[in-house]
Picture 1 (cartoon, helix red, strand yellow):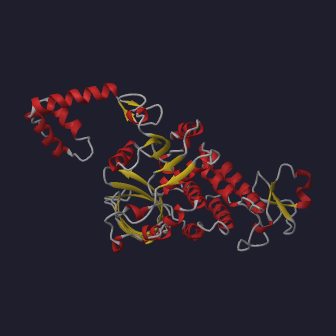
Picture 2 (tube, each protein chain N blue to C red; picture 1 turned 135 degrees about the vertical axis):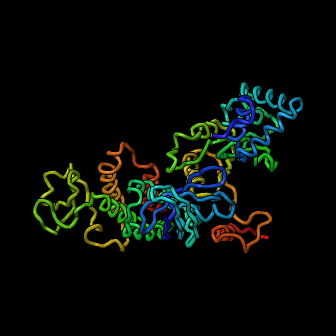
Picture 3 (tube, each protein chain N blue to C red; picture 1 turned 90 degrees about the vertical axis):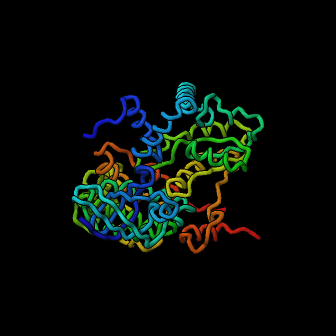
Length: 201
Length: 245
């Protein structure tokens, strides 16, 4: 067994960093060394920020987003259009759509998609909350922004069935050629979906 | 250890940062798992969606290892499923029932039936009888085949209209009359008319009730599981009577 090259506190820091996505043991060691070298500018503030986040982060009781307040900043924002709800699988998808900055709507985070292989059924997702929000009134459109995968679209159809009885317009993201995509490199399925969803030019 | 085989994707699960765990039904190696490095890449993800056919090469140092896969797509069916809710529900129900097959136990006839069924899944008009045929075949492959050829009581091949819920054997109208409240309905197309003919929604619903009962009793209940809700949604979507208006 190799001898530890640093004290237990630093070794513990390296072990924890190595659990982060994108970091292996070697890159975690480099990150830890960088933090240790910049104790004042990075390590201290990072520790404070991490502790504060750990103490204050909550799941929004309205939409399922993660924030430091409940309701979250998006649900509390009076400038956002309350008539449109965008349904996403995960907080990462919410952040991606916010980065795009195209829609000033509110969100609903399902917390996953139906997946028989992982044993995730309708009861494991935040579907009841969505139906409740839609039934409260004031919602005119629900945009289902789930992945264009078999599991994602099975969930999308399940949601559509669950919301069918409500007077709400249900839409979904288009499927087709991504911006910057070259037709030659696209799979047949994407090309077929793009052709079926073609629009007047 | 190394082999190549044709396969259909039953499920995909994230594994690590960039890889996926693929659940496959292969023709000669049965239901098989394997790790696909880089499976979450933008290029690979569309190819390994459930329902797609692949040629896979599995490699491992020992047979009992999970093994690493390399894949080449041969038929992409998932885009056809995505716009048809009944196809998505149908495939989810199909995959859920195939998970009762023991791992690495080949069932080539069942594999062929699954491929045939998946080709027909987007067509709501014709897929029903094929799905019933698949469920009957699955029951048989798992050792619980129904005997629908002759009456369990009289041996007659005529007038078969019931199935015993206890034995899974056909019963004629005459022999079953005193017990008809307890017997399951046997739709005629399963015995006489053949599966190729167009089947009325009522007969199709009765056929699904029949296979559903035995799947529940002999397969799901002993494993303390419930049939997936997708099956009920699939059956409802393809047995819905056309709106006369």
